[in-house]
Length: 114
Image (cartoon, rainbow, N blue to C red; front, side, top):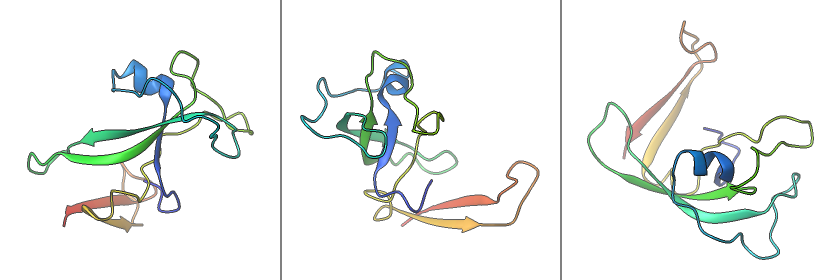
């Protein structure tokens, strides 16, 4: 989860490996800055472990070419999976707990159904 990210993103190549449904074509003429990568606009369906069986649907950009490698940013780092705010904050309450623990050295994200 990145509270500074508006839209959820996942590399299209990774989505393909996970057998997620992908739109066939990228959005014509659109790229994501600063990577200049094309993207496909789609949806992710998710359930939150440890909660009821509610299925959530979030808008998502699938970044890069699904047939290519996982893309990298201008610094050479793999483009990360990011859970953005759009379509999420109207369905879930997210609280950032900055208390470190052995399994979460930077704290925990507490997710609650609204």
